[in-house]
Length: 301
Image (cartoon, rainbow, N blue to C red; front, side):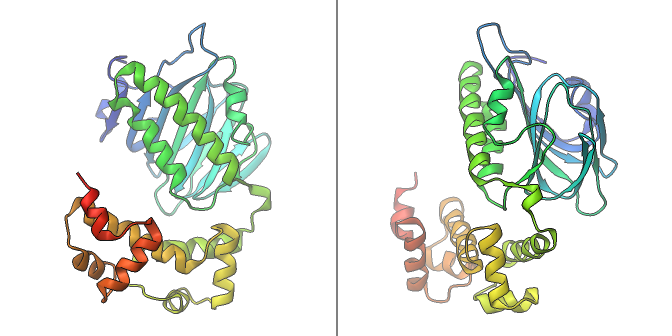
């Protein structure tokens, strides 16, 4: 591995010979950041590797020993984890940790393609750093769907676009922030209610997929075949937010992207997210971001 090129974006596995041997080859697409693969003598811990893997349907992995302490996060799909004499079926939002003494198996389950993020740490204080997340090897955790955790993983991976010394320092800071965020948001898997969570996940994904055409909580309830009170309880339990606020946030974040990257007018951006009245759109946008869409556009480079 060329230390001067710590960022690797792999679109096909013809490049797999360039990867370290601890990475699975049963992935269809992947992105990695590589730091020092072994902590130096004067460093208590370092981020050796961070990655995002879109796994093949036959993805399966068995480890009886590993060089690093690691944390993995399931973004999409279902994964079976066997570790410490227990078995877990993990879906989106699930996290788990393992280390050099861990013996475990991973297997993708049928259904939606498995996509997961991970970080690998080395050094004498790597375990202590990992435990700041609230996770220890062997016991999974869960985070309700949030943009913060995958965003932090993505920033870690893209540290490879920075000069090497700067990348390593920035990666350590981001990794520490990731563990703090996980500790703040995490719910132990043993406290989850699988049926309610699956209902929440189905409704949350429906909002994310159809937010441009949705206008009201009643439309969400009708599409998801749930009454308003139960739907609101699900979102309060798993997202600590209301389904309508999630809908509005999706609309406003998308609209902000249209204003920033496609240079649409305020009226055009409003129409794209289902607002017939651009003045109403502007008021909602300002409540969301603290700035009007017109002023937002003026601040763009």
